[in-house]
Image (cartoon, rainbow, N blue to C red):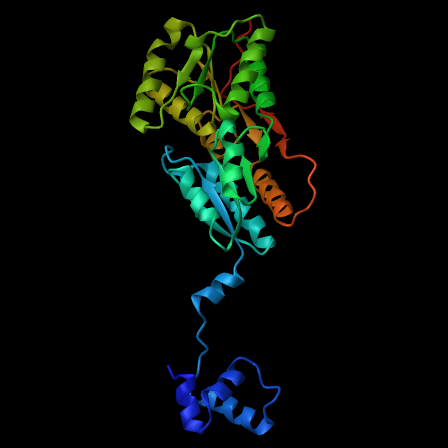
Length: 336
């Protein structure tokens, strides 16, 4: 590729004069000289080199991190993929570009946020007690998704309402021994609110929660399937007639494992999920579940972050989007 210096030599002009035309500084130049240089630039196919720094200055970047390193294939989870899609589309409307990651350590997110071009971040997967300190260390606006409530910005959903409504629905169908399946060893973060709704619904029917009814489903696929098989073998003996699973993905897997072990849904046991994503509709039978509006969650997270970046006044730091009970075939009425 021909250079400014080479074109200057061909025309018998100084490189500075040619450079001024390339960069649009022609106010003090004669029209004849400017025209000669422009024609030469076209004739010799000159292309202006754009330094990486100039590209960087033109881009406004937002860090988007899914702190879910223990989860298998994060973006194969319909929740994560739908959320990311909504975030990307909304950022595009604001003239921003996402820099996505699946970090294993908090410090990875912090380091990324220190980059000059990063204006702020959206983070999924923190525990509530981690968020406030992280925001102080980040030094830039950060909005969390599904990370509880506190002195930080978070967009969540009415998890408690969803957990309570779906448990009450099963209770109304005559179920009294309802297991709770969760992907956490103990109920934390947003799953705690779902769990609390489950417990309060039981209490409203005079049923005391028993720790034995809490079943942990490990991240490791093989260990998780063994846990589901073990439950299927003992469900009748333990008297369970229903299961509330913390996500549709896990509920769909549970139904499949139960079927393989001779435990039919809903004839032998009813199963309910949470999310109302593609797994709820692909499940056979289709899942009774709680619908959350994931795309709206991503859009609201971007809107809140942009308000912070622009320095706008914000009344509410955290807010919860509504949920909706969706009744399908996976829960059977056993009254009478």
